[in-house]
Image (cartoon, rainbow, N blue to C red; front, side, top):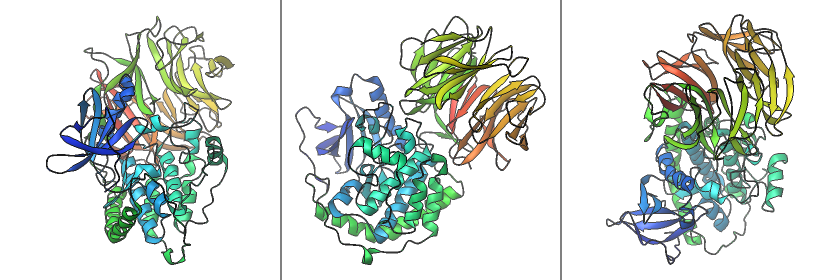
Length: 624
């Protein structure tokens, strides 16, 4: 049994029928206690700190942890038994894992070697594969968030406590120094690739007994993560080579969790315990497990090793066959997972005109505006709750809308029928500065200016204007076409806008593409774009102009996204949303068949569609 600290004055003695026996640990967001019910069953009881009770966002995010954990297979994390309020304080009751964290295990008894290390690597990457398959990015994978249970490692704290525990002066940086990916340090959106980097750093710690990027000052550690290669000489092969690939500085160069798992299962790492150097394991007072407990855990792990690998293999096989994992919260469809309940407009017959997907406070959000309205609402699709609303978005209705992070804050940028570009940082009571750019209705798309966030605006007279969102200055103005801009996107690979016109797409190195009026254009970010003309959508290579593949989208609202290593096109029409695999050309399936889609938005493996006066969201990460 782990060591408990005595209950302090003011802490609860009983929660949801569980008598609290003592404290298991304390974090920036809450305290975790060991509880026991009348039948003798133990549970971990997490209670929000009293000082955070006035923070509605903290309370909402705290309770969301139970819903997030419920989406993941039970072998990956601690099963959630329930949540609620006790004396006005939110709590979560979950399965108690009788074992130390990986962090404590290594500090108390030294690094793992041989079969012990192999089992840890396979067990944790299996858990991460299932987490990503459930459409979740952990964003704080680290040794203290891996509990060493009898039946294998369990991953805890799904993006909840991480915001509160981060100890860095950069408010836009979310994670734990030493185990963060380069993109997280840079303030960019964390993705599944970020988790893979953090997993590799965690395995490096387990194999060497030391953080791969050092223990000194936070700025020094972050600088090494961004620019230095870690020393992996003490990590045995083939794990060493696997970790090296996972620790690539560029997120796109890292393998997926699925790929890592297959490689670990397909190759048997040598048992180097006989050759491992003896180390004096440091003794730490107040740890969650005594040295005797740690040795017992290691013996139990050795005995359970075959079972851990068999379970991992079975799960890997299911995922590899794209069977997916059941979700206790999302509503399963033929493919993908629908997130939460329907949300958004409550007015009967409401029509959503513009919609965008982004991240706010490290959670996916959807911003939208109704056709006849003058407001912008921001919702969390995973729980179906509105998190903010701008009541006055200007005198003209919103027609084109985007979300982009600026200075670590998610910012909405939009235009109305008056051609004015406006901006609003989510969380602020009022919108920010505005610019008169076009004479009438314009289109906006995210862009870049000297590696800083920018917005590209297309006008009815053919002008294309670039607004640097950091300096809030217009930095470029051109007139590449004579007629109205009918569609607009940003070619990240080429560093320039793609402009749809009545006669095709302008901006590709190969010249005009997609002859005819362009209804929509969407760029993949890898030098390819999907161009919709008439009732079909064609994918082109922008450098050569080569036609890659065509899809009969029926002239529907079209968007592109990447999830699970797959490029996808989604088109909404009178029969729901159809999704295609761009690389293979096959149809993946249909979401909400029989319902008419008014508009849709895709991004970060998430799809949101407006239909029947309401909004519905799906995670596409689990699509086969």
